[in-house]
Image (cartoon, rainbow, N blue to C red; front, side):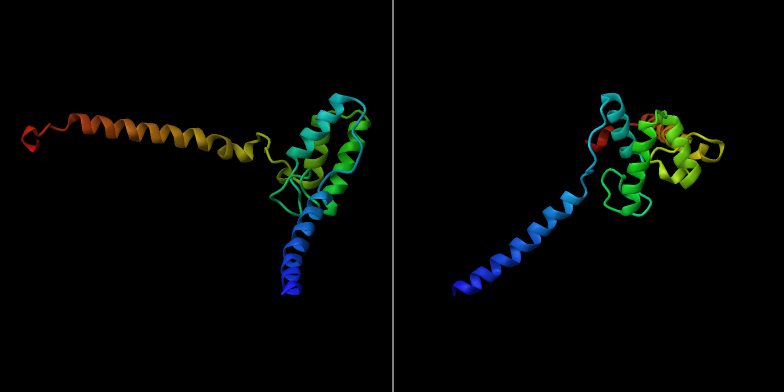
Amino acid sequence: MKPAANGIATLWVVPALLALAATAVAIDPSDELEDPQQQALYEDLTDEVRCLVCQNQTIADSTAPLAADLRREIRRMIEEGKSEDEIKDFLVERYGGFVLYTPRFQSWNIALWLAPAALLAVGLFAVSRFARNRADLPIDEDAE
């Protein structure tokens, strides 16, 4: 019976170790930048830039080779003294607006920015009309 128990334990241990190894690969292996402001900018940018391979992860969380390349490129530009806007402009020019999780306000995406406020206004108007109409209904005192 002992060999079977060891076999079952191995079935649980191996996947657990593989899962831990996968998370270790996701860590950015590069050293921190010397300037704390530059390091903060680097971390902010890698959290704002979408992995173009995964599309649902930031490049800080992605293990894709393209994400690693983008992290290195952002690090290089920060070390060269480029500003956040210059780096974002470069990324948008090269990969399109989709690369940023927070799209920039432009004429073609105005509906994206204004739709939440418009839907909230329509909802508030509908609720107020419903409440007014309910308030105008006669009270049936015999129903009690």
